[in-house]
Image: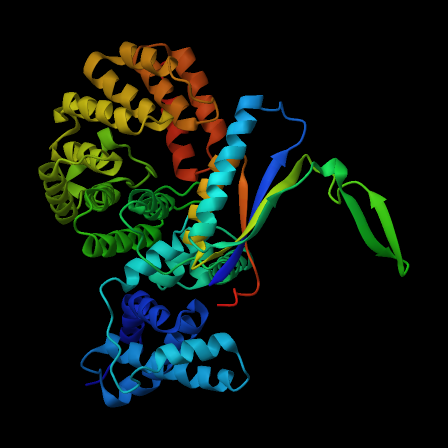
Length: 409
Length: 118
């Protein structure tokens, strides 16, 4: 059976995280594990087109990688490298046996990558590199960071893991809630970075959204009993389902009320709503689950005018109770405006203690003032929002809204 | 086993805690020391006199030069430290969490280059 190189590339992307995670368990060293997995894929690129696809490509890669790593460690062990010898003892238990993944391998690696002793940007880069199988230049481009900076970030993080002895282990029950929150925050950050680029011309960098959903799916598969994991996956799916409607010809940014809902991705909505229902049955609400529930209410409305804003307001009140952030308070004010009118919404916004550099605040104020017919004040609020955003699509949108104000040139 | 330095950082010139608070901190640190020893994690530890008591020795032009004062003219100075044995960073961080509570100051955790003897 002929196999094309892009198919092998596909296996590489799909299997990389699993293979590296298993090899880290065997070898106790991330660099050696990565190197071995990359070498094994290089062998696959040579061999598979001739021999055909092995029955279990992932296991083939892992076994080949381990054998290569053991060979390399043997060479290093002769140079009296203590670590190499230790790893060799570890990896040598049964060299003939095929290396199978343990269900927890990737989970261990995720918790290592997202350890609180590493800074958030390093957690994000490591997670995408080791579990997502993304190349350093790809990650750098996606985050608009110079490649050298990102490479340095990954090297430093790996060094710290090794030198400081950051364990390769799923945290115990006592630590799990905090540690899991960090993992979910990393995945959510990746998604948001993809969903609304803070800079540049593409409103949606599909790549990072796909990556985040892929990671969230892995987490949901590995931790099916953690409702917040399901909540995060649901939130990402429901948010992503609207992507085809977020842009239109001549409109680089179309907001929720103006979106053509027939463009929404039905399959993603169905999957997201099913997850939200599963969370509701468990009745252990958390911030991601509530945000997913809000997204589910939006996705259930056939038209913007049919949105159940009362339900959304109730959900924002719940969210304020467990995650009282400025962003949530602002969104609650927007929901309040839909239920009680723009006057109530504006009063709620003006009662918030949010720094004036948060541009969504000005966007929301501008919209309330526009609806109240306070045109001059609305124009000032649009100006304030425009001054604070670099995203081209968002700027075009705000500028258009400002020019559409009655009596404005 | 790995070894970690748990360094207690004191901010100089800050309002000193009350006498009761200081006495309680001493008691808490004693209790923590006993626990570290009982669990076999103890290597060494102790509190230091203020940075004003420090003396710096260095080589300049091949001569030993001795000067008054701490090496770094910083507001934060080392107030004391532990050296502990731990299986990994999580274990060390668990001790650090107890340490920062006991001495009411931030604790920096640093791994030693060499592992413990056992």
